[in-house]
Length: 582
Ligand code: XMP
Picture 1 (cartoon, helix red, strand yellow):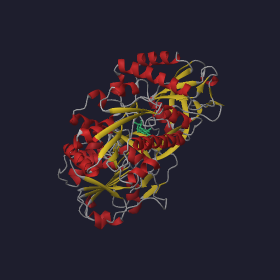
Picture 2 (picture 1 turned 90 degrees about the vertical axis):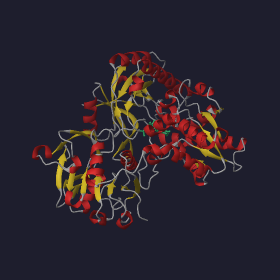
Picture 3 (picture 1 turned 180 degrees about the vertical axis):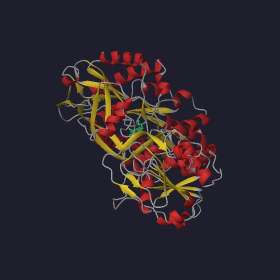
Picture 4 (picture 1 turned 60 degrees about the vertical axis):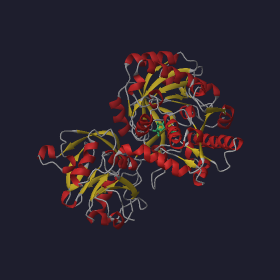
């Protein structure tokens, strides 16, 4: 099948693959994602091809590849990250296996700044450039006929080109916001190099989504489980607009894992019923400590509640289907694309829900959109700003912000700081890892980035803000997801939300998880980690510093909460650490 798209993104398994396609569309060019191995003949309609990043090494026999004929097909090609390594490997360059890799911000130095001859890929761009790196392997020799365009302190070949053949590649990620001039680099590729014409207008999306809803739903009605978050609210509103309010019903499930005041706020929403299921969720989670098991159980319990409601309301008679506010990152980070590494299991992608999807009883109007696009769609629909500007809150709720431990252990002092015997999740080179956390004494983001790149076996660096006792005297204790600890976390979260809202800080950031860790004294066994982050779509994120006076008042109030003996500050970007801790 020939491609109708001017730009085809070849999916080499990276979590950013669809982000690239979306950025290309944002620039006004229709783009599609295809499996990386798509034969060159099937890509004949495209003017440009972009090979995405991916978690593999070119030396792994099962790693994704591309049809080498694409490099002589007449289409211009841009390799990104793994795409650069693959291009170099297939065309005679050298790729060196890396063990630790490089994750996070780096500075690109363009050789043209010295030579004076700019590449069309960097047209209009000069001087040191902030870029975002996430890779293990490195290209150490460019293929014959290629020139090197620039490098960083640790990666001397960070961009290459063979302009006469229309081939370009970069080791960094131009598609993420942390690459400051990434949009211009992509734009240079699309318009300056490929000669694309503008054929896509993002404003077409609302009528298009409504059409898709009507097609998926047919003559049936839609039933929503509303979480109170932006996604399910916008998805539900889209369905109401597409089908008429009478054909859409919503129910909110109180899992007992919600934030303070959340369920009460939902009681005031029109057309929504509340299902109380706290005892069911907390009962199933009693004694469970493993993060993936928690997520799995919550997913299964959601399905049980759904099945119960569906049965009691006779929603199985064929007239109803389930609507969901699943957004794009939910699907790709759960392995929803052809090869995306499984980075996270979502409650709405566990087998129970999967069976509903397979049976065709589901509509997910936002499944190809990112958070910022969902907010824009909500604004186009006229939804209130206080709903649209809410920070995202994960489906499994406070459960994945309440860390548990099966062991009791002390902290381990090292020259760089103290290693806490806890495991938090990270995403390094596109795959998922659980690793211990390093605690340092300074609120120093640059030092945290340096340490995380240098020390292997640690995927998160936090700063000790204030503790009731010296850190060496605190211990990680055997702990579970008890009502008592959940109440403690809920209280701490409410304190942080109240103070960050009244100071206006919450409006400057994308999300602010508050995490309870079982580190403390025998009287006050837990500590709180503050995790304010900035992000555009949750795919990458930067830890944000907060004003000192706010941090001061937050830590003072938190230390006064029963059971809490420490306040820490997460300094880590994503990658290598995820936004959530589990
Ligand atoms: P991570 O932790 O993967 O989070 O960096 C990225 C974004 O996704 C949210 N998140 C979830 N949302 N169900 C959800 O609905 C989940 O299981 C889940 N896990 C993480 C997280 O809050 C952040 O905004």
